[in-house]
Amino acid sequence: MAMPEWLRSRRGKNAEARDAALWSKCPGCGEVLYRRDLAANQFVCTKCGHHFRMGAHDRINMLIDGDFHEIGAEVQPGDPLGWADKKTYAVKLAGDREKSGLSEGVVCGLGAMDGFEIALGVMDFHFRGGTMGTVVGERITMLLEEARKRKLPCIIFTASGGARMEEGMFALMQMAKTTAAVTRFMDEGNLFVTVLTDPTTGGVSASFAFESDVIIAEPKAMIGFAGRRVIEQTIRQKLPDQFQTAEFLLEKGHIDMVVNRHDLKAALVRLLQYAAGKVVAS
Amino acid sequence: MNLIVEREKGLLELERRIADLRTANVSQPVDMSAEIAALQAKYEELQREIFGSLTPWQKVHMARHPNRPTALDYISQLDRFDELHGDRMFRDDPAIVGGFALLRGRPVMVVGEQRGRDTKENIKRNFGMVTPEGYRKVQRLARTASRLGLPIVTLVDTKGADPGISSEEHAQSEAIAKCLVEFSEARTPIVAAIVGEGGSGGALALAIADHVIMLEHSVYSVASPDAAAAILWSDATKAEEAAARLKLTAADLQQFGIIDEIVPEPLGGAHREPALVVGKVLGSVSLALQRLSEMPVEALREARYQKYRRIGAWQKERPEPIGSTR
Ligand SMILES: [Zn+2]
Image: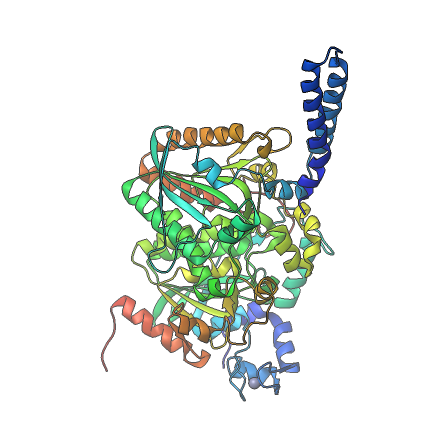
């Protein structure tokens, strides 16, 4: 798979070297897979089909043809509470920047997908567990505002442990901010699609993730409001394995479809065609 | 165990002794005014010592005090209340109380999170933890209010949304998310009062408003301190530390621009003079509604959008902390 120049520059040499050298053990079947083979298969286990968590840039590369014009990259985290526990918030952020190669938990921008101009936001669990603080909320809001201005469909991939504790109420308020932006965007007849990936919980699931026209989930993704541990502690019993999986949510009527990663782009393009009124019977 | 209830015990004992002496003083020939005055002075000193400055964790306990006025204590002081029930789909959630009401002569839609005062009522009200059915009741009441142009008044008091199996099966996330949508879109003024504890998305679901009021010792946080400690350090017993770090007091949040007004409480907390506090909160709500009702609907909605659009703490490029943008 050829890597476009924008992606090469953003991922950096380290990430490439890491992928080449490393192997990953599949949580689904225990098979040991070379990172490089895994990347070539869209981070889906070649043996059992387990969907690994994906980096934001890899995801964008999988979907976008050609250039991706990032929105909100200049928005960087502050430290409104002056947070420090075992580490300061600034040190935690610096560690995650190093580890993930990202400046925050979401990458947003404009690009083309099979000929359709779209606004795309992709959250990344590798940065603070995909938690939503001000920057995530701000970038998502900027994306929706830009999409509204340009009348583009918007697709957001979620992956989040919920609201970011270290930003306190500023984090919670991002639910209000993003919702207001979603509402305005959708009011004007634009298509909004969310793709819930593993995991999508808390402040993200209880805001823009579940406010879209069409909700897609990746196989076996864990999706819910409360975390599994919290529920188990509350009810004092073990939950069944299937609880809060994408398949469970499909059965309960919470989401529209569960789509394998290899079929995801095609599924999204079909939705874009309906919204554009450009379905040509073949 | 509630920390405030524990600390109050000595005070309540003193109160009883003073009352006894006063009764005795009337019926007996010996003048005990001096003793009464001395005890009264001691009482006031102790009261200042205990309540003069509360730590964030003590405020959490104040917000959870079993005698603190709950949503129904406010609703019962409205001129009129016609309760509406149910989500029209599955169930009526007793943790949400709502309906048409008259506030100082003004027709409004009031919606509150209701916890119980004792074990029996708490079981009925699920400790004020709202289920998806409750949030769907909130949505339908908000929609009706928006259509009729009736102002919405919310009373927030919850540790958080219900985290049970059935709540997940009934799409708790979706229920909260759609509350946020309804309040964002509502074509009518909204005033929210955080009267007890405001915990996480379960509180925010009723708290997107044009004017947000908080009682002096109420708390409002991204997650309840207990939950935050579990999330951050996998240790719920560190809730006191979490309470201190989360900046969840009314004073903090007003400084951040996240709430708009603080209603002071009497020394010792709202439950010492409930009628006074309820009256003050309803007075503040009424004043805010009067101001907001004069705004054209579109201007009101634009102001609401911009209010939440601004909240955040970020900076351009440079990774040093700068604090709030407001
Ligand atoms: Zn596998």
